[in-house]
Length: 283
Picture (cartoon, rainbow, N blue to C red):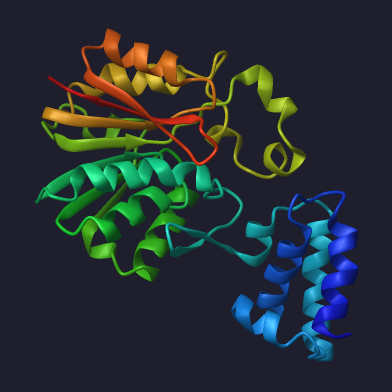
């Protein structure tokens, strides 16, 4: 079959389980053809796949048809213009998180020698992106699980910022408790799905992505409360606390921050016009 034939046939088959069936087919083709770029796919529509290439494609498309997320199948995802290794056990990077990273970069761009903490390593998307795009920065990245720390370290190496990042296993701030360590910025995209809503998530999320990276307690706000209450001990004066929040959580998170003494609190919208980022300053 030619590339064109494959795109037509399997885009149709994926329509029932994917919002982006053609894109999924093209991403799998890129992998099957040896990690070529999408331009190669588009200018070689009449090319026929070799037997080995087609078998590899079929193996991956069967996984996609079963519902497995495309990022776990091909093993990577783009975020902030960088390539990230992903695998089951880490949350897949999403465009929803880019506004948080962009805002922190904007706040830090004219400052030097910044110490930044990311709580919840995941794939390392936030940590690595901040290290890459904020020149004079040192990053610390905490996660409670081993797989995210392993994947985060690999992504730091792949994106040539491993010399700027320290990865540590930590339950929130436990790894630095009573050590007098303080940061200029604390950033987090914590688990924020209310427990009652987990079962309503798309099966490709709830059945594959790590539960402890999704569920944020009864109302989804447990980690915002815990981090905000404890962060005062770990932020320098005029330090910044920056969160990604769920689509209807900005007001609640802003109130949590205000109740804990944060000032100059503001929100930023994502490309859909949803308040997705909450920022506050420690006095």
